Amino acid sequence: MALTTRPEQRPTRAERRPSIALNFWQSTLGKKIVMGATGLIMIGYLCAHLLGNMKIFFGPGEFNAYGHWLRVMGAPVLHHEWGLWIARIVLLAAVILHAVSAYQLSRRDIKARPQKYVHTKPRMSYATRTMRWGGVILGLFIVWHVLDLTTGTTHSGGFQEGHPYQNVVDTFSTWYGNVIYIVAMLAMGMHVRHGFWSAAQTLGAGSHTRDRALKAIANALAIVLTAGFISIPVGVMTGVVS
Image (cartoon, rainbow, N blue to C red; front, side, top):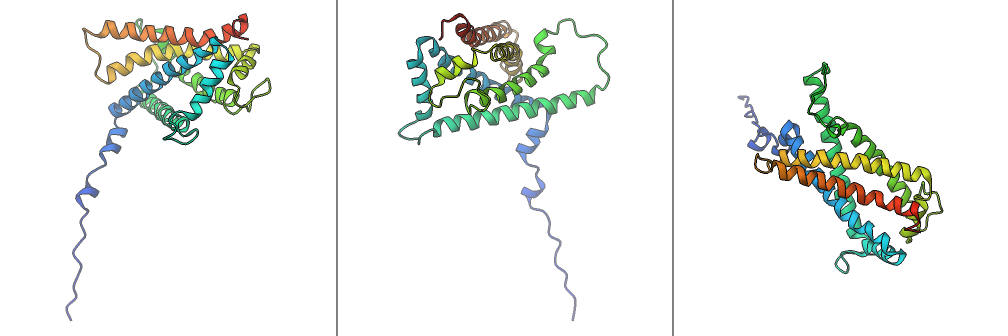
């Protein structure tokens, strides 16, 4: 009896072709695009968050109502807190992708240029030089902020569920709460200023004719967001919010 052999199984076209998404993620340009896009998502969140937080200057009724709306937004289509959790998941994914992209790009930059520069580039801004440390500061701040005003784990004044106005006043009635928040907001402002400009360049919005306008927008965003968020602890310290 003649022996028969099975024909060698060749990989399918799908198996031979590398994943487009994987190739995109592994490329330096892909990571920069992910970093820029997620950065814009977070800037959009910061703008919306600041608008909501400004309601604290209209009294506890307005601010607590805003906190309640966050839990019922999307109703009646969405169940209680579903809209809030969708926003949290999207924001968390953006933060993780942004941080991972930044770390991996930093490692590639170190490998490509293992020797540190002898002199810092004269045109490199303070925000650019501190971009990495600013990201670390903001990451630590986010953890503290969630544990303080979302879960109440580290809250100092007796966390009250459903009373965000009083919780904010409690936090900014402590010296360390003010210091942590103000330092983080200064880091955020520098991060936004440089990050918006970098994202615009990476995503192809930059040009010789638009560079001045983009720089003006980046500066304005950084100033408005920083001043707006810092006005809240200042308002508590001065008694405007009490």
